[in-house]
Length: 281
Image 1 (cartoon, rainbow, N blue to C red):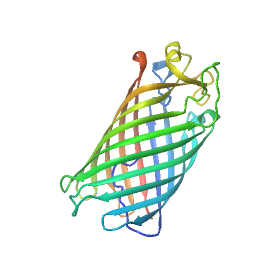
Image 2: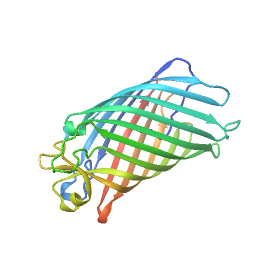
Image 3: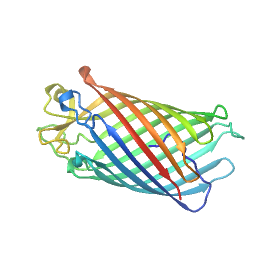
């Protein structure tokens, strides 16, 4: 996900955009015990076709469609393809480059994975306020909502839902960008999320006691199970170095550190380091 160089063109026609990425994830199943933590290299990409819609002097909007996928090198069962739609709106609250603005974004997608338990529909929405603090610095604050619905109920324990990948959560975030030179910037984001999380591990009686849904997760291993934990808190910090290569392409290197806590001191850590690229013809 790009945190910088989300440049927009005020064009009335459909505009394509290509994104690609590769990153290392040291805990793809979000497991608590080190013996259950699986790490992998993940590669993926998305193709967008977006149409901008001018709405007046201070407002603009856009709609679009998206197709893409994500591939896990060692744990191919977690790989998936996706197809979806996006919409966005932005309003400037004043005149000049220093004027603040508010924006809203929403997306819907269908994900088809290699294993049935991970097939899902996804919805995301966010509302944010942003302002240019100086010629070099831009800051924004926002709220977000995410929801994921597992398509098929696959219970393994009588009386307990078999949809551990049906999740929802609410987030608050703060972002900052500081440009240096003509084409580079440092980017940071702090995000706090409260809601459901999914954790995949071998049989764990402590997690089982607090789980609201359980299903086998062969994507990680034949003896692994996915557990849904509700009421969890996740704090993540992302730092990135972004470079705009030319008028069409940008590159970003990002590191994200994540920590989640749930009931009875259940917790896990996760670190992701990746390279992300975007191209607009």
